[in-house]
Amino acid sequence: MARTFGWTSIVRLGFVQAALGAIVVLTTSTLNRVMVVELALPALLPGLLVGIHYAMQSLRPRMGFGSDVGGRRTPWIVGGMAVLAVGGVGAAAATALMTSQLALGIAAAVVSFMVIGAGVSACGTSLLVLLAKRVDAPRRAAAATIVWLMMIVGFAVTAGIAGKLLDPYSPERLVAVTAGVAVIAMAVTLLALAGLEGAAQPASLAQAGEPKPRFREALAQVWAEPAARQFTVFVFVSMLAYSAQDLILEPFAGAVFGYTPGQSTQLSGVQHGGAFAGMLLAALAGSRLAGRQFGSLRAWTIGGCLASALALAGLAVGGLLGGAWPLKTTVFALGLANGAFAIAAIASMMRLAGEGRQSREGVRMGLWGAAQAIAFGVGGFAGAAASDLARLLIGSTGVAYSAVFAAEALLFVFSALLAARIGRSGQGEFSIDPADPARVVETRPVDYRVAGMERG
Image 1 (cartoon, rainbow, N blue to C red):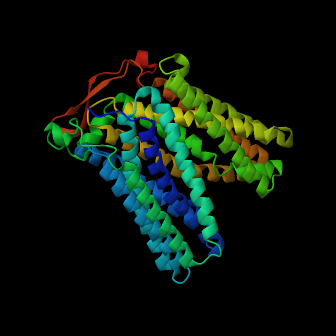
Image 2 (image 1 turned 90 degrees about the horizontal axis):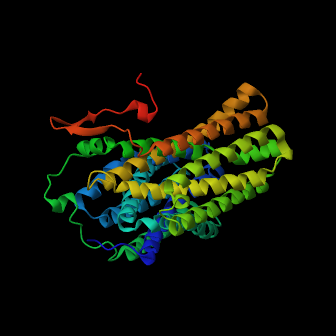
Image 3 (image 1 turned 90 degrees about the vertical axis):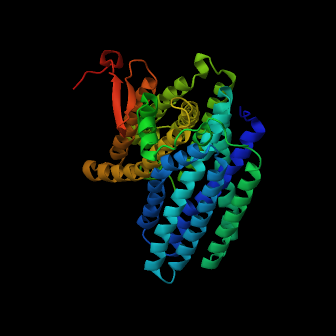
């Protein structure tokens, strides 16, 4: 039986996540700024490129399936990081090419961001599966916190150091700095993973003697599991609500409360500080009180969703009252609730990954990762578009923002209801039709009275 990971091993995986974040932040933030400011291109261009990177993460279930078949996650993590590094350097080179050949540079950037999405899918999915399989239940919330905080550190350190190295800006310097970050990220990944996982586990399809299933069949098997299917919907809805606020909070502070660009940036810092505190709080509760009601991942997930809804309702009220409302306090509360919810949801994801049919952990984690990525891609755009539409229809800026925040609050309330239903009794049982492995057959119907629904 494989050994469980201690804190040192968890931190080593955190370094891999930090390396992943270091490359991603250059492609989604630094290149964004260069295209808009130095190259004077429409902001829509980097927005579409980042959207492509999210759309490519629909490959996550397929990547997870590949690691399930082989039984080892390390090759997929290392391979994914290598692909991500190539994509990151390619994106920087494409941005530099836009200076002289705009059309060719944009075409190269599209390809590079597709490669970036594929690399993140392979590396990120297998890393989470490895963490889920080898970390004991009482440590999962803390492990999720460590890994995510180290990714944020990767964001911050890379942005700070790369920012200094990029001055004075030149296309050649941009490519050189990105290549340097990619090389360091690969080196960190290889060192962190050396000897960590060990040999393939007997539970893998490759060693268990089972015939290799088709991906379509494996995905249908996972989707047939009520808990996996419910959690996929929950992840999509909750992450849609989580991400929809990102692009409108600072404009809201400026338009309604009169914040300057510097003040609105500081407000984002207040939100991140709250998120950090919420993550630590959820991790502490999950580790110290595991098994008790207060330490229940379900309770923290539901509570985090409801608290997020309450904070967003506070922002909606603030849009109506303007400067009289305590904006910073509300934003800190939103960050606190978001942080607690996020860590509880990730720890729940780690727990649920191992429940259900054996050797399908990668497919499950990939399915949830794809739902999260698509929700993030849709959420940022939808939040900004909704605020523009609301201002157009309503006329009053404050009321328009209030309407959008209220809608996001309702999404979080719906997310809490979905979280409460995951794993409840009264769910139907399903199997795979042997004649058509992609077809799901309901073998025990849902008791709709227990489920709280009526048949339509």
